[in-house]
Figure 1 (cartoon, helix red, strand yellow):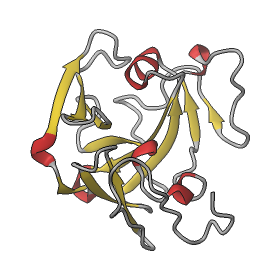
Figure 2 (cartoon, helix red, strand yellow):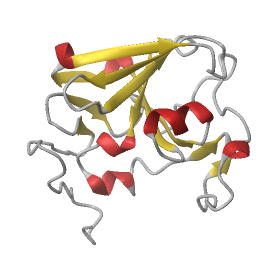
Figure 3 (cartoon, one colour):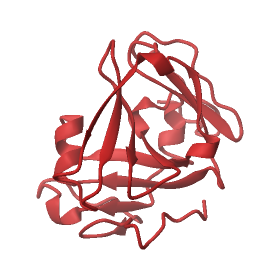
Figure 4 (cartoon, rainbow, N blue to C red):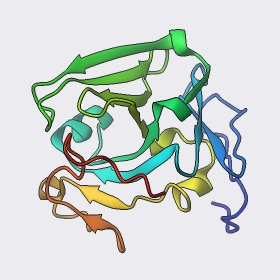
Length: 179
């Protein structure tokens, strides 16, 4: 990792080698490089950043939690690969009870983002797809952990991050757009 967090650090990760990061915008790319998105790194387009320990995020990431950030759809740009996305939707295990649609790369299987009926106009992107690794520790550092009731016992909370036992977002409570 780069020690100077103020400058982009874009290591070779997967097959893509054209990710970029500027003052207020950056890219997220799937593992094979077929899909690339551009998104804002500040508000109003960047809505919030969070870790999720819900059972769906554990299954869909094949890990113990998901690191996410919410972008206003009006600020999300598909640079390439939109036709390379496939989707899977369901509502049976979603906290809101409303449909959540997951968008994956058809080539490498990377989950690029989720869109929930409970939150129209927003996309939930995966932090691991962001090309500039320094953004993971700076502008995109999680501000809240949700579903901490489902967090495994050997994983400790993130210092200085809000802790919520269930969902931090609900149809009645909009995501925090103060970023």
